[in-house]
Length: 250
Image (cartoon, rainbow, N blue to C red; front, side, top):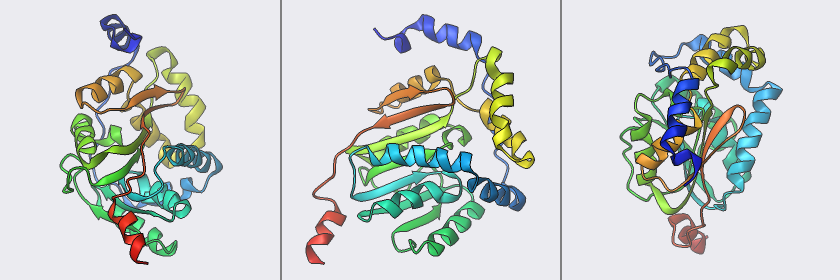
C-alpha cells in the first residue's frame, strides 16, 4: 500500500495544512486581465509555461483534438499548437472576457482556424464522450466550485487512449505558508499579489488531488514538486481520429 492511500497520511495532511479557502467566483475585471497580460511576458511565467508545454509534448500525442480547460488567457494551448501542426483545439472558459481575449490572441498568432475558444461550464461540457485526444489545464482546477465534477467530465470527454496534463498550485503546510508567499509573490506585480495569495489558499495538497483523481476514477498519476501538483497520463496517437483521416484527402 502506498503512502497516498493510507488513512494516517490523510489525517496528517489535514492536520499540518491550512483549510482550503474556496475561490472567489466573481467576474474578473478588465484591469486584472491586463495585469495578467503584462505578467505573461515576464521571464518567470514564460519559464513556467515552457515547463508545462514540454511536459505536454512528451505525453505521446501529436495529432488529434486538444481540450484546454480554463487556462488563463489561452496562451498554453496556443503555444502547444504552435509546435504541433497536426493538433486542433478547443479552449473552454467560464468567462466571456477571457474567451474574447484568447480569440484575439489566436487571430494575432494566425491560429484561429485551428484553435477555437468558447464560453462554457467545465462542470457540464457539451462535448461527446471520448472526443478529445489530449486534455490540458493549467492553474485552473482550484477556480472551480466543484473540481471533482470537472475531473469526471475530463475523464468522460477524453479518449481512453488520450493524454492528460493538469497542473495547479500546491497549498503549502501552515508552517511553510508565510515563507512560500514571501518567496513567490515577488514574481507577481503588486496588482496580482493578492490574487496569487487567494489562489494559493485555494490550491490543493497532494493528498487532496490524489483523492479527487481516485473518486473521479481517472486513470492518471498524481505527482508534485515544491510549488505545483500534477495529474498526468501518457497517451497514444489515434489512427482513426478525424484529423488522421482528413490527411488522406489532402
